[in-house]
Image 1 (spheres, rainbow, N blue to C red):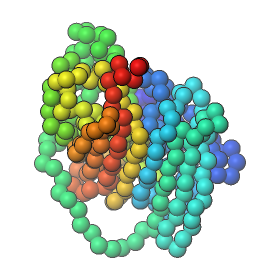
Image 2 (image 1 turned 30 degrees about the vertical axis):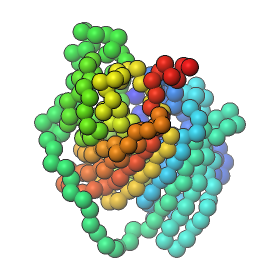
Image 3 (image 1 turned 135 degrees about the horizontal axis):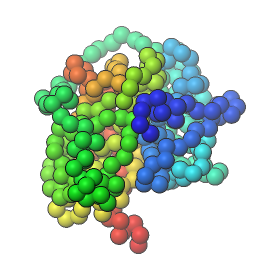
Image 4 (image 1 turned 90 degrees about the horizontal axis):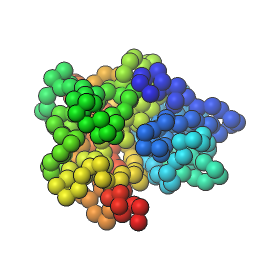
Length: 288
């Protein structure tokens, strides 16, 4: 998947009957359904059941089982509440008769109110950085197996502020800053930009929680799996313009890593916030 057009096609679900939709899968190189895909498709399914004047303001999700990329996913939407200002939906993603994911999404009318935010971190702009693809290019000839492990074509371009050596990563504090945007131009609908942001928000979180431990274990020897994911949409934005993901991991314990992220546009507006907890184990422990 190389472009935003392919991503939009992936997120557009087939309507089977009222409140029930079917989605296809991105053929992820790690052979499991990508969590960001399920987040975005679930949000898309919910949007298909709410009035056009309501916009998502929060999403809370649990990843229950690893998804099979060879099987389509059924999304069953429950209309929990339709209020004067807020609308609530519950979504269950199903494969082979079993729930693999569930989420609750709350939608709201545009309303005026109090307004404040934290300041955007002072980091180099995206124009001063190189994309992940260019950063990994030297590995293509120097270490083809490692290049194949880390490189993947994505509909989102990422530019890392902190330099990380994929061959010999060093122990560091659990903080990270990543610029990102969709490749290509997206339609103007708010829902499309929120769905693309939900997709992109699942990248870079759990790896941040591993940074303090990279002197003990190599990144390629770790197994990562998202357990839960929450995000809040604060202000308007475009996902096809540069956004800064400011990440930190306050805690890792009991084979779980916890990471937070604030997302800013280039004007410094805080447009969204994300938290995620995920499983982090050595692959040896997973096999045993």
